[in-house]
Amino acid sequence: MASRSVNKVILVGRLGRDAETKFTPGGTAVTKFSVATSRRWKDKQSGEWKEETDWTNITLWQAENLANYLTKGKQVYVEGRIHTRSYDDKDGKKVYATEVVADDVILLGGPGDSGGGGGRGGDEYSQQPVSMPRSAQGGGARPAAAPQDDYGQGITDDDVPF
Picture 1 (cartoon, rainbow, N blue to C red):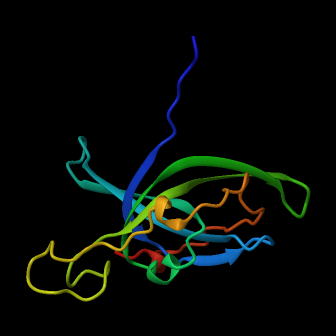
Picture 2 (picture 1 turned 120 degrees about the vertical axis):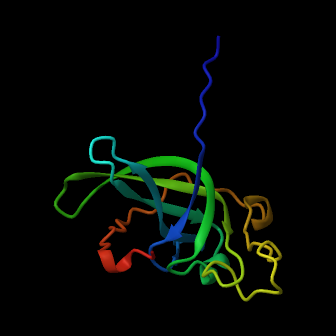
């Protein structure tokens, strides 16, 4: 019997920095950004509310036009898969990097939010999200592996958009 597995990630969070687009030697666009997702819970012992924020690195292939809209603080919906890659750093040490390779990225938010362009009226849901689904990005083969760059977090409390 054949085994079956699923590798699917859905995130809704805020961008921690502006997206950066670079190009492979073959001319394929690679856009990278980080997304902050938070959860809150009430501590059973102290009764205090606690919050935890996780940062996820996102890689988006063949979407150079979307990078202009992916700016720090914007709320986004990201759908993709988890990918872990490894490379040798300048000292010869093996480094592992885990990221989400995005299939779909949609800017969220309504009027007055930092997530979409200006509003058109008072209805919170009147604004259409900006997106770049994989099906609209044209054909072309997806590269087998991500570029061998280490995009370190380097994030401080000043970078948190909320």
